[in-house]
Length: 312
Image 1: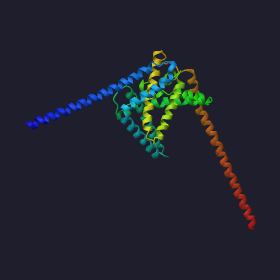
Image 2: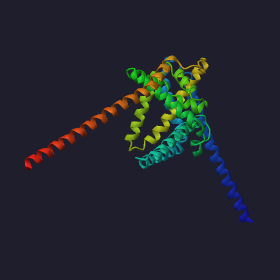
Image 3: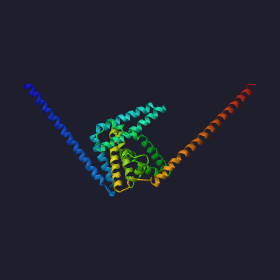
Image 4: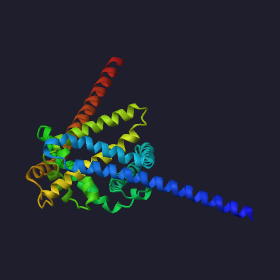
C-alpha cells in the first residue's frame, strides 16, 4: 500500500514539474512575442524622417524571431544548401537533372518565404511548410522572369536604372506568398510600396551582404544564421512598407507605372535582338572556320606539290 502511495506521490511530483516547465516555456514565449510586437509597433510608426531606424528595427526583429526558432531554421537551411550543392554536382552536363534541380530550388525558395511569413506571424512551422505553397510555382516563376526583363531593360539604360529596378522589385516574392497575388499585381505593388525607400532598401541590401560575408568568415557556419536573420528582417521591412502604402491608399495598383513598363518592353525587345546577334556571330564564326579549313587544305596541296617536284 505504501508503495502505491509513493508511486502516486512521485507521479504527482513529475506532473507538477512538467506543468511548471510548460508554464515557464509559455511565459518565455509570451515575453518574446511582447518584445517582437513592441518592436513591430515602434517601427510601424517610423516616419519619413527616421527611415534609417527602420533598418535597425528590422534586424532587431529578425534576430529576436530567429532566436525563438534557431534550431529549426539553422538545420533547415543547412540541409537545403547541402542538398542543392550535391544536386548541382550531380547535374553537371546533364540537362534533365539540371532542370529538376532548378525546379527544386524554385519550390524551396517559395517554401522558405512561406516559413519566414509563418514565423513572423507567430504561427507554428514544420518541414511540410516548405512544400505546401507549390501551387504558386508558375506564378512565382513567370513573375520572376518578367522582373528580370524589367531589370535588364534598366541596365541597358546606363546601368543605374537597372539597380533602381532591382531594388524596386525586391518584394515581388513576398507579395506572391503573403498576399496570394497573381503574376502582374506583385510587380505593380512592389514598385509602388518601395517608392521613397529605395535608397534605404539598397543600404539594407549592403548590410545584408556584409552579414553574409561575416557569416562565411566564421568558418562558413555563420551563414546558416545570417540567411534566416536577414530573411526575417527583410520580411519585416516589407510588412512596414506594405502597411504604410495601404494606409495611404496607394494599393491596390491597377496599372503598371510607366517607367517599369518601358523597362519591360526594352527587356523583351532584347530577346530577338540577342538572338539575331547570336545568329550573326555564329554565322561569322562558321564562315571564318570554313575559310580557315579551305586555306589549310590549299596549303597542304601546295606543300604536296612542292614535295613531288623536289622528289623528281
